[in-house]
Amino acid sequence: MKYIQPIVYGESFTCPHCGAIAKQDWWHRSWNANNYSEKAQNPLKIGTCQHCNKSTVWILDKMYFPDTGNAPFPNPEMPDSVLRLYTEASAISSKSPRGAAALLRLSIQVLCKELGEDGKNINTDIGNLVQKGLPIIVQQSLDIVRVTGNDAVHPGQIDTDNPATVGQLFDLVNIIVEYMIALPNKVSGIYKGLPADKVKGINDRDGK
Image 1 (tube, rainbow, N blue to C red):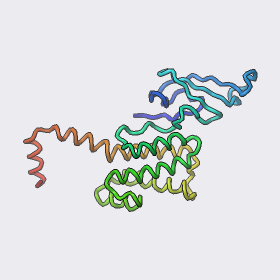
Image 2: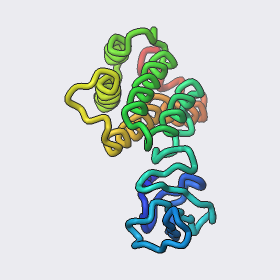
Image 3: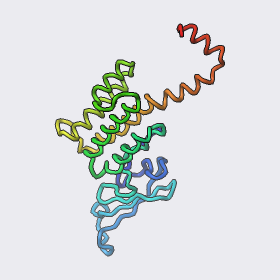
Image 4: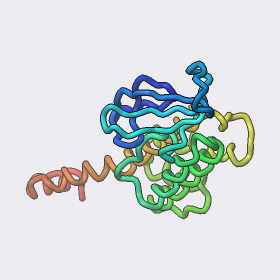
């Protein structure tokens, strides 16, 4: 699903309430209700989704309501243990991108455990998954979140204070869940629906 990150005064974006990409109507005001200053100088802004008619509340350029940050919706197949961390990271992403990056790194560590690894050393877990045939695109996605999230705890060369960087990490976590959990579940469900004689023929071909 396409995702357009919410931004203040954005003409249209993915509504954090309903998930639709919809046009936004804007209302703005200064702290003094009687002071009608220029649009850009008004600190309080409210955007209303034309699809669901629910509003977002912004102070300057940061969204404070709903308290979900500007993160994409989580993959529906995301395990609950990972989802809790993803949701927490979403809630602080606009206020603390560095904190969100660290939580996303932790979510990857928890995801590795969900995939059967030890869950104690994320680098070792990824290496083990590679040996088990992990696709390179997923390995690269895991390592990007691992390295960037680690940098959020131990500052280095990566700018984890950049909301755009952290937004990419949310995308990658969803991609990893899609490849490692959602897609196998879909294929398995379809495969189980094949006629028994066809499955036997496939197993005989593969020496199973």
